[in-house]
Amino acid sequence: MRVRTAALTALVVLLLVVPGLAAPAGATGASGASEASGAPAAAAAAAPLWATYRLQVVTANLDGAEHRRSGDKLATVQRVIGSSTPDVVMLQEVCFGQFRRFVAANRAWIGDGETWRDHFRFQQLRRHHGCGRPGAVQRHGLVLASRHPLSDVGTHRLPNPGARTPHRFRMLCADVAVRGALLRFADDAVRACTLQLRAGRGRRTGAGPARRAQAIAARKVLAPIVREDRAAVVLGGDFNAVPTKGTMSELYRLSRSGWLTNRRGLFFEADQTGTYRDRPAGAGPGIEQVVCRLAPRVCRWGEPTHRSRGRSRKIDYLFFGENRAEPTATSTLLGPREHLGGDVVRSPSATHDVYLGWADLALDLR
Image (cartoon, rainbow, N blue to C red; front, side, top):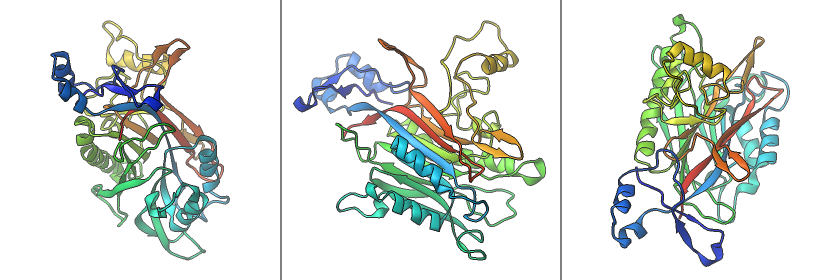
């Protein structure tokens, strides 16, 4: 990983870049050592430049079919978009008719010389009888969209061992060319991906092992980008597992008890709350779990996103790569500044609520 050693000052009109801003956790490496040892000025000048940007992302599962429940399942999504102006929107279980209405509602994102495909992408996973008119069959799948231009769009197959249905699983990804108010970031500054892991409970269904295999496959696709510090990464969607499950250990940098010790995980989740604390002397895993639940600290939990049969659970997530995200709060003159956050907005017409998350990320400048 390399050190991101510069950010623009407020004197943007002078086009000055001031080195020395602190890079996010994990963004240190060989280049930092080179500068410390007196590397030539030319090498330092060639180092990539970065600036911190607060990336906002919305994810929502539209619940399978247009006619399964009454009401417009896109209404809450559009309300959140209107009040928060997110950079990226991720939708799962979307009928193609819903996708077309979503595009129409957000055509303002399409700039001069662009087409809808520059901002909206649909990935079919199956055909659904509940989409469209009663009895009709329509395409059904994932949506990845952004008010910024998308490029290098691709899909990655996720395994589905022991499947009894032909339902396919894919991860849909794209580079997002983030455009700030004063800054223009690189076209590949952010790699955004969305997915839905296999649903189901109980050992007989085989859903648990399948979900874990799918989470591992997703991590393997994104691991080189995070570990080699190529870009900021955001992964979101419906994971069909609560935070403490082993499936989520393939993604969370946090251990189940809330410590930054899980080596498999490469991501921080937006709704991690509180701040890190020193490890209590002599505390075992059981005690750690109790502390995690009771103390105001960063833990693998979050506001529930799914309601069914009187139960509420968190199964929708927004993960940010550890190479560019900062999980801890920093002290400022105005008090602590949180660098990760999330909020859930109730959707009256779907079992999944709309989840808005954000992170302060170090993004490469153009």
